[in-house]
Length: 249
Length: 317
Image 1 (spheres, rainbow over the protein chains, first blue to last red):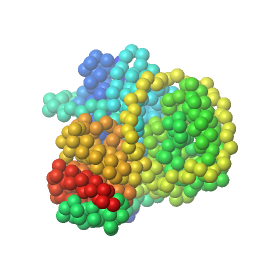
Image 2 (image 1 turned 60 degrees about the vertical axis):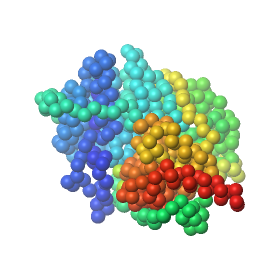
Image 3 (image 1 turned 180 degrees about the vertical axis):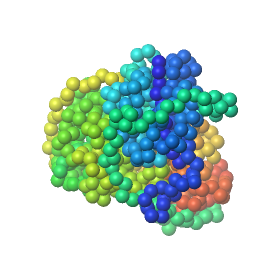
Image 4 (image 1 turned 120 degrees about the vertical axis):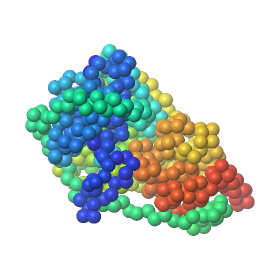
């Protein structure tokens, strides 16, 4: 079986996003960028399935500037076999991303496509579902457990009330939640080896995809600032404050 | 302008998050709001939904294959009626987030996730970067699809309405995926996202057994119990307790964070609470920067004392 894993380069999850003073967006100059954490979990899951003998080839795909090669190389160091960068400097909204990945799926014919359930920059949580939709494939979203047979993937999904298990006919698109696995740390020899693995660069035109943006961000503001309040010295003072000042108990 | 809302329900009633979605829809346009109720035995839900204020029509679709909300089948039904609407909304729960993007791609339109404000019928606000930025976004799509963050809108009144009930013709449904089982975490406590008081625990609780200490406090305050990602990952409590950027978003009147340091991802899920209390032994914990009342101390001493004081106060009252 062949797997395609879609990854995105985003602001590192440990770094607090700062709104630009002209309110045009988030300031991404001179900040650490990393692979979207959910996508790293997607890569790890594909690698584990390869180690288990279920998958024999893992293709890593990303969309973006040449700098996105970093997150492809990082994924190859975890165990991906080769990479594809669809290079563009345009803003790619989820529907456009799904169309680009669909063109890659048509080209590569994978049995399984893995994506993180959401990117931690735009917090959209859409691309996997849209890709499954365009392909007319089944979808298993927010997965916390995946078992693959030759015909189907049994997926346990994190839902609001607990856990739901569904069976997705192959080929399928799976999106990963936090508790699916804990990604390994790449070993130094694997990081070196990843530099030698094939990484193809394509353009959106090469794939024959029309990228359109139907949404326009007019501005990005700071959220209302929540001021820290006071420290209380003991439980009694806390109860007094909650009862008499805040009036919530 | 007609608006369609995909209702989430539990075969008894539509969820509070759906009632909040209705309020958001009424802010876009209040004349012709339709609520779509899908399921296998949801006649009672649909009938009750006719009482919700502001809803003009309830569309009911029943079929055995719709018993569980699979994205593939629900999308097929919605697609067959989508062209009648200018906006299609769903609550930003795991239910809505799973289905609506699939529908959007079928209609070749984008989707706005987690809207928190309606600025105009084409312009909306939504949080990005774990709520560290609030984006104002304009959509030019012919049909605007969006999921609605329930905590940002009041719940529509579930009585006093008088909607018409109409039965949908169900198209041939795909069989791409099938339901296997569900493991629901049953609790007598209020639902986390709807509770007036939320008591959350973090890694500071040290193990699942200690989480029981939160229950006694929650009992006195009529609260729900939540958790940080660290506590869920460590296996102290199930996944559906998680409050944060990728878990549940809550905005109760009172949020008590116990043994939670306050990572930005956690703050994203609770910082719109009216009053935040933090109890932590590390006086430099980031949670104190946003807490209305901070108590630096050992939670294993503070928590029993707090529970006991509240119990005593109740007796003397």
